[in-house]
Image 1 (tube, rainbow, N blue to C red):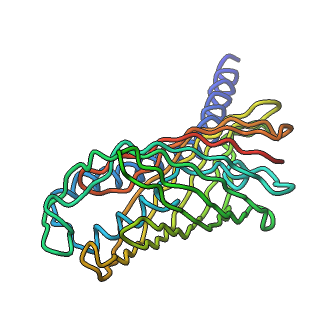
Image 2 (tube, helix red, strand yellow):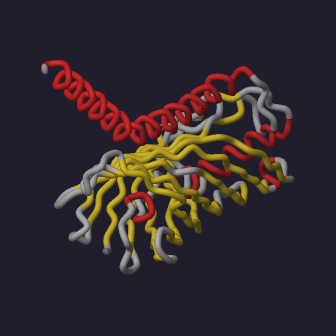
Length: 289
């Protein structure tokens, strides 16, 4: 009589194990995707200094880090959190850039073959309006200033426009309040106007987010591997002409919000791979429901 009970217990234990494995599968998939994204960016970061950087590579880097595409950290939009956006959100953004890369011997278009730290930090400020564009998507408009911290350096205008779209959502468990994994697609256009060039940039990325559910305060963690394109149109003071190129990057952060509140706060980072480049770190306060 003990055998059937033993078999029943084993069957229940096996079913429970399968249930736990199924519940953890989406979270494991998110972890693998995030790890793969970060590993790819780290590989590109390490490999970049080993390869010669062209004038186009540097133009792309400049265009990305001196426009909202790479000079600011990501906004935690409702697309990332999976919430229904009821109206326009306004985001106040601050980002600190510790340093940028520069050619070692004059303008890169005039024969410089190496890059070094410019010892140039920046405090970047911007305001972004995020407009709902249907369920699971939004459009954003940004205006801000790139403000170098060096003596005699001048701030310049930055403008941006972008959007994001939620592609799919997966639950990490069988309970209604189980965390969810969201996968999306986003893109952004940027413009910058420093004194020696006009800069145009564009990026496309795949945002991944892990979002807490339930009542009250919630936490969202997000990461976005990106491909960026950039063009620089130089003034005659630095040799004139124009160049274009492509760079890889990654952005992400962690945010806290309450669906019942009009305030959400997130801390983020943004990085564009290039020799001697450093990341951008910032905070965003989002207002609206």
